[in-house]
Length: 201
Length: 378
Ligand code: SF4
Ligand code: SF4
Image (tube, rainbow over all chains, first blue to last red; front, top):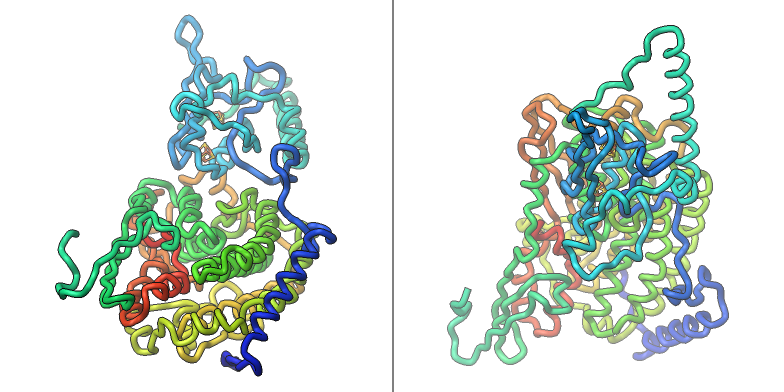
């Protein structure tokens, strides 16, 4: 292994280094007006008028997906995301009918966006493809406790929205869900309908 | 806290921080001055303590990843890397070839990001207000765009998983990385034309804040700071973790260990990182990006229950040796988790470097150490 040693060259004339540096800044100054953004032009954007390109993988806050209608979401209120969320910012309560029988859907589903650290763990662990990472960012509020605590109604978004923001992932998941449903339907016809899988908690 | 450090008549004790713009975060120094010369200097740290280790001991192993991002928030990829190494060692998980390459690409890009920012902000400390920093941030921005594209987040990447990485790199993304990296040498040339021979920078940095070899070794300094003092120690070379043995790169060394050497070692390291990334892109094989055996861990983190034991995983982070120590008792939660943070340990020699220098130089010396308070205080 050769080890380059740092050579500290002495400038022949005092001041050439500074002049050279000024030439670099001059060049950048001129370039910033005449070149494209990725070749040395102005790379900042005027925010409210222009928006940044957001990549497909981008993630910040979680939201819930529903298929047909918001009152029948994919979420079964199993509580796995609640348990695995590192900051414990999710709160789920299962809905019950009048007889007290659990309905396998959430009555309360709240995420405290003020606490959420955008890790994506909830998306990873959810067994029902229900919670996904969104990319909303204009969500500033005036009150940390009220405005940042997002309830079920605001969290639920249609599958079409998910397909719009993350077409590739949504297509994969839709295909997987369709296959699983077809399998379930095929299995259900000959025998008694099986229960929809166990929920760990 | 209130007793004076040095009880001499003509000295004056002044306080920097914790909210001083040149202390790079909530960090406080108490300096004893005699005129403009520093006679003594004490560090007061801990303002950003967030109980990182205790939090991790209450989480599952995979859940800690998101918290490691927040240690050294400028290069979360490297933090993920160290933690992944430690946990994989603990559980004996192997990593597929392709994932190793992706990891190295990401880690080296993160090193470039870190060094760019360091040099930019060092120049801010020197008073070259924001022009060099802006050029550095401009290049950093492109790399952060890649990070966002690949991992989902610009800074809190949370990209590594046990046994691989979260997403695969597509051909498009590889092309994008190649494009960004191919611009860097020209940019570094320009950056150096701006800075390296600048007389003001040389006068402010050369022979300032020297760190002698023996002190550097005895104090446990690692990373570019140690190498600037002329000691050839790079964990990528000594441990050859991951697949660093396959790449051809050099370890730049300084001669005097002054601020200028520290600045210049980082410029040279960026050039070497560019070489590593180029080699990795050229050699990346096809295949899995995540060990299939660890796939269930993503769905259910509580399945990750390493047998009782301990492991220490360390990497050469841009700041020095970043080590993670894990003790398992067979449950899904680590029994003990400790981070060896390079920022904290490199900071310990600040007093030795500053005493006898001028007060304005103390800021530059601090800037050249490269600390991130998220890591120092944890
Ligand atoms: S893990 Fe999924 S299904 Fe279970 S409560 Fe959370 S969002 Fe609902
Ligand atoms: S992204 Fe992370 S912190 Fe936020 S709700 Fe999901 S698991 Fe919790």
